[in-house]
Image (cartoon, rainbow, N blue to C red):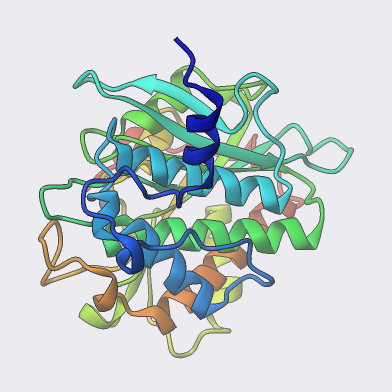
Length: 322
Ligand SMILES: [Zn+2]
């Protein structure tokens, strides 16, 4: 039975987090508005603060907090003018994970310019979910999502790239990269997984100060990703950028295992990985901004490279993991 109109209006007027268990008045985090510029530290702080707020409960797949996180990303994609998957789907690829939790990937894209490369797809990604039970996942991976949103803003402002660029906030990564798997096994909208030529993934990019290095995992010698990282890392002398090692520890594995080359940007967190101390106040925001900007420049390079990324040597599975 539909709710009475008065109730619908009342609910529509309430802050987005009302209905979450502990959200009250001044404690209620506000949904960040569509920002004016990319790579703005204040914006990225606000995005992390919202996603890692106690009211979202650690963004456990299938919960109200997960739905609020999905809504926040969806609204940002809309205000940035990203193309949705379809009228019916909007920006959401719904799926049920292995634990029976109904959740979603949030996916928007910018079509490539008319030309031979426009069919190619570069997927820029970060996972949206986390673990709950007091673990709010600020670094893991609200940091990566804030970077994803900032990169999407930079691309939207710059105008079309040669290739199509997909921005994906994947669900259910923590339980086994299930959102990325759903994306590649059953691509949403008109997207075809056979058109994906590169994955640029970010997971835990807010803990640079822990070990003073950001890894560009998967940037093997001779790959287009390595060329792009080498071309831009020198612009960030304050960042130590580790290169050349593999990783199977995030959504990039679902691309690599299907023959798609990847870059995986990651900073180690020696103290609070998967712990309750992974909170928004601990994120290294100045370096998060710089890592996001570097990642965005690298993704731009791949999106416009004249090299034949499709015909490039595909990774074999021994470069997919450690
Ligand atoms: Zn993670």
